[in-house]
Image (tube, rainbow, N blue to C red; front, top):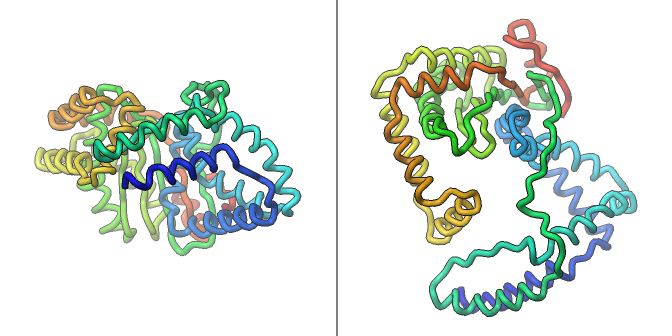
Length: 344
């Protein structure tokens, strides 16, 4: 609401200009709570962890996603939580310099969603807020090139769980590639017409999914609460063969296109629409680009799906599973590729 803009900006200014990292006991408690939350999330969200783990070798964006929100982050926070309050504060010392580099006016990007009256109230306040921030050398939005670290093509991360979460990922087209729209349809197609039947109905998992991640340039298949391990990996290979051979009907394709359009047109609140618009514009996805993508989805043909699968799903893939030692030992001889086992 418009009347809350002024106190909100005052609070934001205090947060960004008067931050402190000197309450060691409180910070130690918060780190411990965060580490505990992440530890407990692995068994319930293993599919998400397995997927980002499998995709991390395909692009810098995917690698950073895993570093900041994957099993690497779980293990990192666990090690931080083991430190004494004094030891933790020493580890956080570089973080102070990082905050000084990030929390400057040159890195600020703001959008306002509301009525015209709200905007009028916000404009003057934002100008004052902007001038209150320290100045420095802009760091955000700068491309930093680095080599992706090498890793095994197959990983099994073991924890205490009665089920498995199994992911297989391939390098996919970039967001601005002509195949991007086709791959969005391809992921809906293989999920609804193949994986659901083979992974859930026949394999007994709670779910079998496929997703194309345009920003990361990756395509992944993943199972949820899966009693299988080796069988699921074999199903993924069969799914790729199914796509390449075009063993799906025109009706299957039509349903996949409608599913894709439905996902693109998910109803949002006014502020949700504004937030999505802002995010898309920051990525350079204007109305023209989005309309071209939509038309690409609608016009997708069976041959285009088959050709896209042949082009992108023929290279080396990466596998990651969040599973148990027992399941890994049980299926070891049946696995289509060796999995390097390590504890979460």
